[in-house]
Length: 275
Image (cartoon, rainbow, N blue to C red; front, side):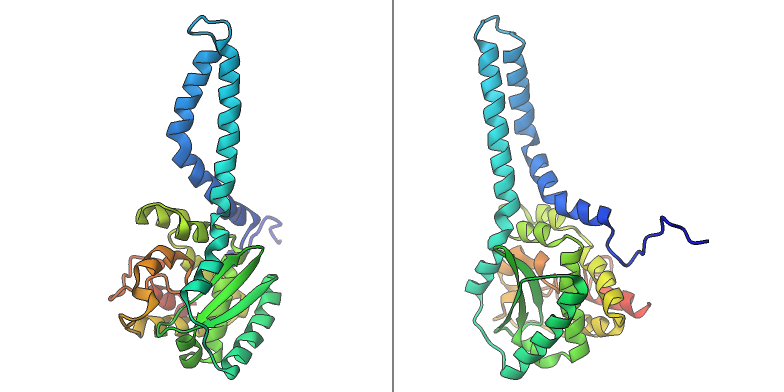
């Protein structure tokens, strides 16, 4: 007998998407918690009349309303801060790619955006010697960035795996938390917490299930692991260190694999090969 509550583990559930989509607000609220407690204590003292002055409760109400307004404004600003990442990336890179590269990319994207239910994706091939790609918010739409090195050296089935992985992040509701983590003025540890450690591994699962060929994606990950990114590449720069969480190969500046890290490309590749 079929279980009506059964959920395919390789398909994002509504609850999983909900958690990812609300993580940015939860993170911002945690950062504001000490300040909120202080304001709450002061406001409560004013309202209950601790200081025995008749007009102070009214002041307490005003303080509470003003703080609530400012808190809501700051939360919305923080949540939307990642929307500028696509524009920042356009400024960071030079355009590149041959006509054949653009045709290959357009063909793969057109097929997969329908599979993943994604709209309004603009594609950009950018100049860099490192293998990488990213799907990022860009205003009301999305922008897909891929390096000309990846387009040149990856087989079509490997390119399909990379694109599917990036679209899977969108389907999982990860893009906003990853993009905000990239632009926020927070520590590296906080960036990792906000972006979600292990999220790349999870996106691989969803992508491989959607394209039904995990070995293509595994091949792309192996190529990323074997490459030594030159010092002239963006993917060893301080800016990449901040933006890493939105990219396909999060640790392209890592010299040796870390098999204890679910986001490591070699570990991800081996996991896909065991399917």
